[in-house]
Length: 377
Image 1: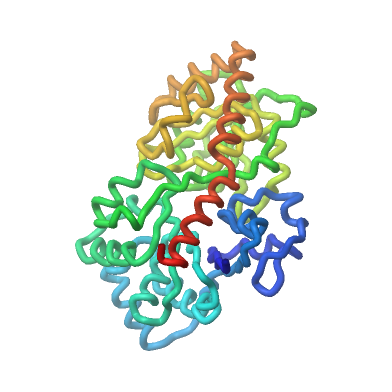
Image 2: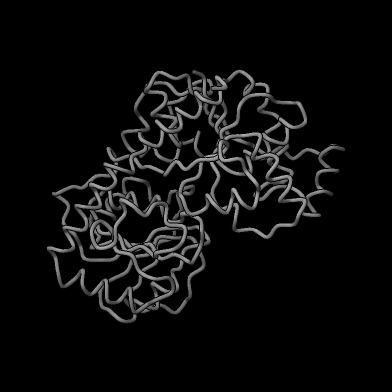
């Protein structure tokens, strides 16, 4: 099967000689030094024998009557969430190549809705598989809701977690057959423990999305002596407790590469994932990466928790209430005081990821859906 994956800019530049003429080949230069999960199953499906195309949406600074009309519409907030004129225009230039594929995987809402718009206009007819996350976080009007729902019913949607499912189906009136949950997975071959790496006793926090609640973690840090290292480019207060250190980095800018991040995970006492309340499964990748490295994870329990069966507080993860510095203080103190308990949580976390959170499992579910939409069965 021929499957195209479309991303925002930044991924192809990382691939070096693992890609030729828009298609993934079987060279391993990328996979030796980086995990594969942020290609959302493309590497794994390639290894299953599928013909995988890799594309990025590149915006073009051009003016045209259709583009000007679209800009008028966007001012009235009629387009679906995370969709804007530039990305619709950029997707248009990919359509001739995308027509050659049996299924097209759109890895962001804006890409998916742009493809849906061109499909509704009769300019594109390939099956669309949309990875959707966070579309409930935006204000909506009746026309915007209606258009979003109509487009979602033209494509097949996968969500990273169960938390968003019911509200999306209800608000956008998405048919149950058009939407499913495919929990995110990580590359457990890359993210794995290293017994030769000694823990250095700090708490590590990583993330750049708007739902990170570093304020609560920083407030909590006033109540314990353990060092806290926060890797982010988000705005952080200038006045910090003496035990809090900020490292400015993000996945797309790579001040710290993946090997350096893995080393930081391995040396941490534990990994903190503080979140604001949300239905979105925020913090999922960091949580799974840290667990895969055998580290205990302290995670804010929100309605967006991606699953509530195998992920179990006190066994393979440590859940704390939103906005509660005291809970963070108590949990971190206990981790310091009870090394055996700490190691047990970390080992159980690794088992959880191997059983439930591998990128290969995510890719298998993606493959199943692509086969379904391409054959119409």
